[in-house]
Image (cartoon, rainbow, N blue to C red; front, side, top):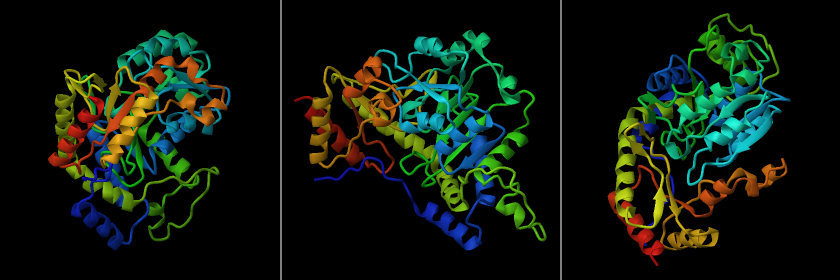
Length: 399
């Protein structure tokens, strides 16, 4: 029996060599490799600046803190996502507002999104699920429609003059939408480089942003350095200059910087990234062709106006329920194929039930979840692996 894991990291000798070079350099924490990785991330996203931290979660939380979001404020996101999208709002003391998906969609219902915006709303966090960039045209239309409700609490919020859009693009590095790269569409965009992502630094994340009137990129970048390095006004690289030991702690902040070991891994992955994206596209094409006559719905990864990063292959078993879906996953596992579910909606989780959420209020999200199966999609899959997944999946769901 063949063994097909769900999402192993694609590591070659190139990544190993780059990490070894970092180790031999004597510089293993935040340093020149991290700065170079940030420069290249910004270049890939066609933005002026990027900052790299130890996770996408840290990126989202720190920008909420830079924006001054806190108690009394509201942050809107989708009910159909992983906890990190919403937990960062809890971390800063603001209120999580969840919006149901549209019927038959993994994206937020944009009409309900507009209705959810109040005078307390400061940020909306859309989710680019599976690597597919969601409809930011409709997100920004909702924001503009409710501009009159916005109540800025500080200078950076005044610079926007409206609710701010922070993309949870953890899955979507390298995706495109209407001719723009993911990273240059929302006001801020957070990427994940976790071990299971298309491009990995083991752990890690990056944040990009669009120009903000009256706010200098250098000032904004400095805020992330202060927040991610204990509030220290010099990073380790600056302190290595002869005689430059003196520093100050300007606030009792956090520790969530990226290291040069992580960045070294990312630099090697970045060189290979176009071929990694292409391989994912090939596999998705094979899956789509094999399932076109099956009673399923799959995520639309590629079209005239968008191109996914091809991170996850989500399949809905139309007309099936949770029990039947789980039975398919178990049978696939019995044949050596690891599948998953993306995602169990947040209102079904203990932590969010405790915040007062009830899945009964999110019927469309539940409907998406109850029959969703995620097939293995990664660049370690051989053509024979892909054929094995297809033949077994079609066999199981056709019974």
